[in-house]
Amino acid sequence: MLLSGNDLIEKVTNDTFVHQTWTAADQATIVLDTMFTFVQKHLAAGDLLSVETLVSGDEPIHLALETNLVNLPIRYANQLGKIVINDPEAEVNLYMYVEHPLVTHSGMRIELAASVAAYLDDPDSVNAKISEFYNRELQTINEAVLAATEMAAADDDAAK
Image (tube, rainbow, N blue to C red; front, side, top):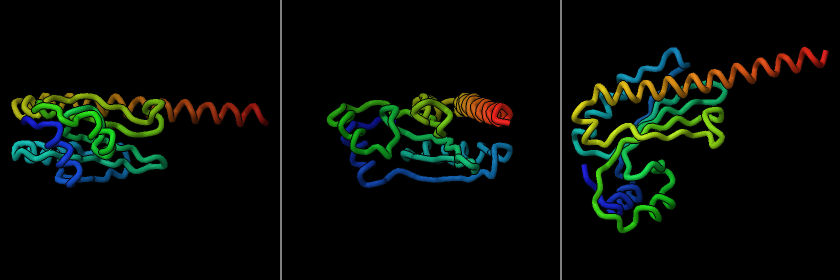
């Protein structure tokens, strides 16, 4: 799938992306297969998309996939427009995002999953890469939560 920068700006401005959100009650109930089936169907149809699974909790975790020319969420439309304006046609990519205050200092990790063409050529291997990415980032979040809990418990013990 090829798209020029100006075409991307137009699609973002007119909100012609396919949007979908799923919710998981907790990390044990995350089902990515539904998201993967949805993504494959819409990419095969030539749609641009922004999808996410929202994991409920004290601090929700956002597991997202978006098509874009650059690794910047489409919600940053103004900045995106400044970056890609007048860019020639280029391959559209599928980016994977995890958002949570403990995933990085910025609260977001973004990585390239694959180009849309590569995804459509071999969706199973790209879906495996996406799953591994989400698992790794969930582990990072869980370890940070555990460390914070242990530190709070140690502080409570020291205060006694």
